[in-house]
Amino acid sequence: MTENIKNVTVKALAWDLAADIHLPPGFDENRSYPAIVSVHPVGSCKEQTSGTVYGAALAEAGFVVIAFDASFQGASGGTPRSVEDPAFRVSDISYVIDHLVTLPYVDAGRIGVVGVCGGGAYAINAAMTDRRIKAVGSVTGVNFGRLMHEAFTGYDPIAALDAIAAQRTAEARGAEFRVDQFLPADPRTAREMGVTEIDVVEATDYYRTDRGEKPGGRTEAVFSRQATSVGWDAFHRAEVLLTRPLCVVVGDKPGAFGAYRDGLEIYRRAASTDKELVVAEGFSHYDLYDRPEPVGIALDHLIPFYNKYL
Image 1 (cartoon, helix red, strand yellow):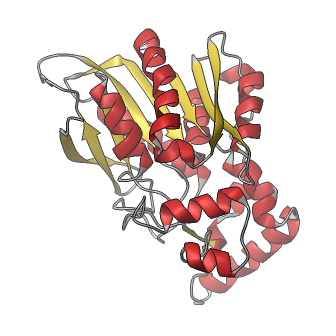
Image 2: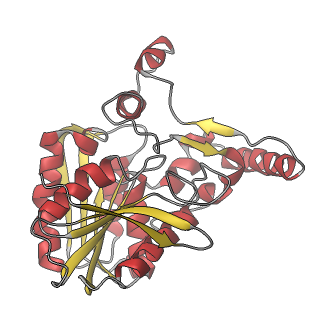
């Protein structure tokens, strides 16, 4: 696969976002190309699946692809670090598009977005309100707001919000930030803890081993900044606002993070007249991050999808 990457900075609210632009083979800066924004999972970074897998493959297929680190994460700016805030995650996508439309080799009328895991739902949400996005793809997309409202708060969101409020007040008065880890330290620790749930086991294998571990991929979050996530829903008003062509890819081995469930829900609810649901049979959420066969299934649908609508 051709490696032709430009490292750039993108102006966001009051800081810069770090981004990699993956350029297609035979890139000619005098030409005009369709472009795709690639959005990383929760707690991930541009050097993981959004950039090195989907970003690289879509660039190889002829698109200019920009993979970026979210605000407060990776090499991007913003403090405190390790904040996972859906409002910022979605607005980051628009800031990245602001950058794309200034590039002479990008056709501003042919911009799409693709996201993996939480990035898939962020991409869908962004496409509802930023009409510069002409096509949206979601790979094993997870509605992080739904996950926070349910399992990640022990199905007691009000108690979680009370605890978040108390912690934020303590920090405002000088207490140390509380940073929660999403995963065990490594696969061995997971086994010793008796962890058997497929998404947690496979996330640990991806993020905590040489398979996917990168310095910028910190699967953690500042607890006091999670209130917005608890009250957020990536799919709110999809029946009215999500009109762009949509390609949803999921594996049919469901796990606790709920990508299969969320994929079917948004496919049903989207107002899009052109929409496709791709089920990679026999594969799980994290298989779609980097395993060649399921990634190939996803790309076999995503590439023609973007060729048609961009």
